Every structure is written in structure tokens, then in C-alpha cells.
Length: 360
Ligand code: ATP
Image (cartoon, rainbow, N blue to C red; front, top):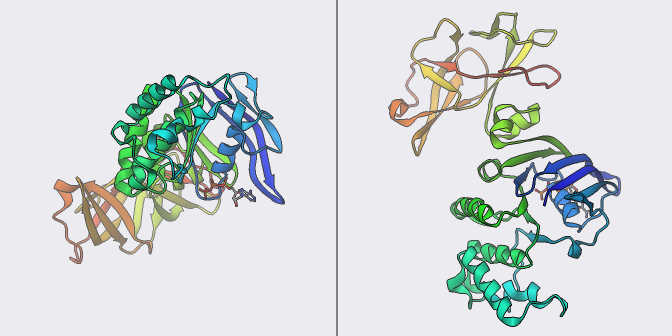
């Protein structure tokens, strides 16, 4: 089932939570709604679910206008951050609940319900725990049961609101991979809300980046990361270093530092900020003909195959810069030694005075 959202606006009193939201989700897609707290992700999800009415705009499921259709009639499965399982029911009974509550004419026979529950519990790999109660499950297990329950009524759309938000980092990571895999098997158009960039990038086919009630950009994880449509998206998707300086048409300078650049426009007074992602730079013991950016190593941390170095600019800038380098090559560097190192950016993004991003 494809989903189309047209010109949605939603206010709560004087506060505008969503402004002119347009969105197309292809059938079978797995879409991440990503944005900081308060950006309107949950409100948009609730409007798609039918749990909230927009002030303006329309929601279509395939070509059917469902804007005023009751939530229960939308064939939507919902999973919340807090597992919301019935404590007094076993895992199997939780999953069966929705099927048993159907009006008699629509309710499958008992054996069919039992078979469906078994099938769903196998799908979420919880079949060995069918007789347990929620209190006897871990957070990740509860969330898998919540998913099975959401799928019991064969929804055409699955909506997940921070489904892994309450879990610890390791379990979250496992469940993300698992959700991706599950989605491939069930082929239900799915939207999930997250404020975790890594989660959105890892799980989704499409990412919708939201800020202050607006959609900033829609694209594949690679598109939004490599071609951010606005400064907000660039800032929000991962750590960056902002290097402030001035540009004279050929060379960018800040204090003693200089960097040859072409094709970049600056503000009328020449101010130009360069954005550098930590993995898009390397270091050298000498400057090269294009870049003279002396730095001093102030801290180092190793994680997996990467070493993260914190660098203080020498004679330019007053912030600490961060770069991520290959561990084998760079882990021998130690902080505190007074050697000067030279930063060599590989890819930079410029930001003009009005906040637009320049070419890379
Ligand atoms: P979070 O990640 O913190 O859940 P979010 O991006 O999902 O944030 P929403 O929950 O959609 O954001 O909320 C968007 C804005 O609308 C927030 O400022 C919130 O306070 C406001 N809001 C949401 N629901 C209501 C409501 N029922 N009444 C008043 N304000 C609301």
C-alpha cells in the first residue's frame, strides 16, 4: 500500500506542530522519520495512523483518501516505544488478542487463530516463549511480541514510534538488523520514527529528515548524507567540524592557516565556513602545496578499526577538531607530544552566509 501525504498542517492551540508536509511512500518501503525532539515526527505518524486529525491537507492510502477514516478502519499496525503488552496475558494471548476481538463475522475460527499466532511468533523468533508473561521477557523480546501483535491483523501499513527507544545500545543494534530482515519478509509499507541518525541510516530505504514541523529532505540514506539539502541536514547527520575563516577567491585563511579552494563563493565580507566530516580528512607530518592547517594532538580514543583524534588548531581557530583515521596507521600517535601535525581535508562542504550549502 503506498502512502501519500498532501499539504498537512497541524496546530495545537497557537503552536504549529506540522506545516505543509508532503510525502510519498512507495508500496513496501521502509521509511525512517528522523528529526530532533519536537520536530513533529510522532504527530505525523499519528495523523497517518488516524489517531490525530490534521487541520488541513489529506492522507491517501494508495488512491483512497483516508483523511477522515477512523483509525480502526485503516488497516494500520502500530508499535510504540513502551511495549504496551497486556501484563496479564501470555505472549501467545497478547498476539491473539486483536484477532479474538474481531466481530464474530470477521473472526477466524479458533484453530486458524492458533495457527496464525504460531506463524507470527516464529516470524519474530519468539515461538519458544509463547507461554511466558511480559514480565518474564527482556525489553527486546517484548518489542518483538509487540511487532507480532501489530502484524496479527494483516495490516497494510506498519507504523513504529521509536520502537527501540527504550532498549540499550547493543539490543537496539540487533533489533535494527532484525527489523530490516523482517521487513523484507513481510513486505508491508512501514514508517518508523527515530531521533537516532545511525538507526535511520542503517534501517531505512528512505529517510525523511524533519525539523520544526517541516520536511527538510527526503532521500536514500546515502543521498541525504552525501548531498544534504540544507545546513540543518548536514549538521544533523553526524558529527562535523566547522572551520571559520575568510576566502579571497583562491585561498581560504584563518590565522596562520591557509587552504587553496576553487569554485566556492563566500559572503560579501569574504567570510566562509568550511564543514569537514571527521572521516573526510587525514593527517601528515608536513603541509602540502594546497593545505597548511597546523594542529596539535590533544586526545586519542580507539574503537574497533578506527582511531579518533582530537586536534587543536595551532595559530588558527579555537575549537577542538575531530578526525577519524585508520587505527593501524595512526594509533601510534600520542597526545601531549609537541609535534605539529597538518590536517589534510579530502572533502569539504562550504556554507554561504544565507545558510545554503555550496558544492563539494
Ligand atoms: P519526540 O522525538 O520528542 O517524540 P517528535 O518529533 O515526535 O518529538 P511530536 O511529538 O510530534 O515531536 O511533537 C511536535 C510538537 O508538538 C512538540 O513541540 C509537542 O510539544 C507538540 N505537541 C504534540 N502533541 C501535542 C498535544 N496533544 N498538545 C499540545 N502540543 C502537542
